[in-house]
Image 1 (cartoon, one colour):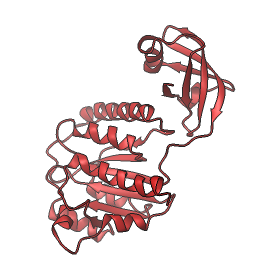
Image 2 (cartoon, one colour):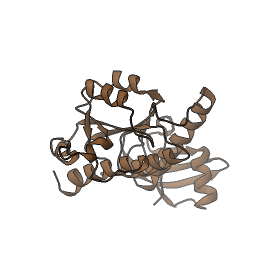
Image 3 (cartoon, rainbow, N blue to C red):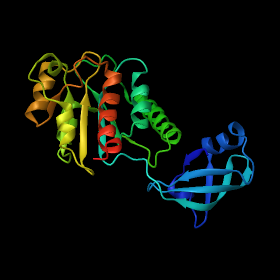
Image 4 (cartoon, one colour):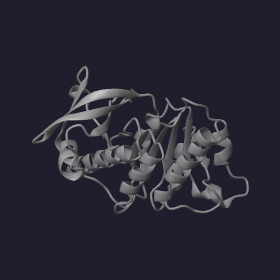
Length: 251
């Protein structure tokens, strides 16, 4: 069944109203008819099987038939702070990171970020990113859509990082030394409900000044395996490793 995330104001006692792009998708793309079933997600993380009762113009109404007892969320809150990469690589990070269970994403302007955003571009990018995260959440049958936080600089990220139990940054220099900080060992020390912040640099990595700033503020430099990963691969590696530890090994 197709899944849709419905704003809280569109929920009534036993009915859901679906509008805009989602209504268009139901009526024009899926060509659904009354009595067809869909899954509707509430912003609080609950999901219900609903029977379509009416399709009119740009609105669809559905009746709640069964609340589902399910969760597809990682047991930890993993926030990916991604140094702005070139081209559409951020789209890939958001899409695959959402599929792998990220709780939130923070775009970060770093010293070696080639791209930069003005206010007009920022608004356009943020709208696009929210749409990507929503669609990826629907496709992967998640219960919640990851938060997409506003663009920040590294100093701003550091200043807002006190609430995390673990603060890590992927540092390629760790992959070049025999005395490296093992990401796997750190994951072993994590526990359900921990809040984890993982900072990933852009294509050129972190500058020495940025690495020093992070270390001075209790961010642990880690290697993500012995190979140097592309910026768009690093978040996937980290999220997949945490998912395996907590969801497949049953820790």
